[in-house]
Image 1: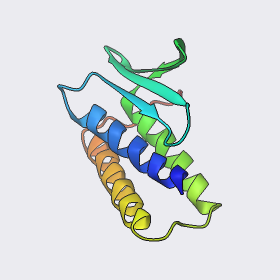
Image 2: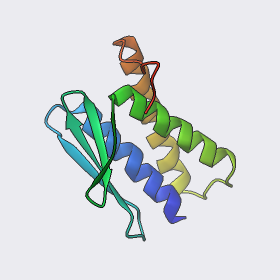
Image 3: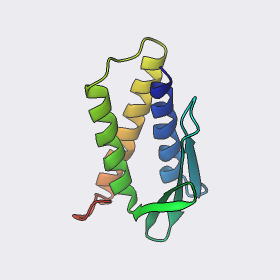
Length: 115
């Protein structure tokens, strides 16, 4: 059950980071775990790091696409949660997809080179 709450937190946190000019970073901490990952805005996009080590830096649309694909893959192989977690998850996914659609309209689609 905690994984679904963590997915909601990740989607909502990244959406806030990418859609708000005043947000400069977002630290995701998995619920019930010690796992954390830091997303920081840079001039070229987002820097992703964990435990003080940079994992990658890529464009926002690349991150959005990777997260959507990862969530879809995970949910396609896992039984869905019960209410109210299902409603929260459904809303977070819809909001995240909506942001991706707006990025596409603004021509911020992923480059050919993915993260």
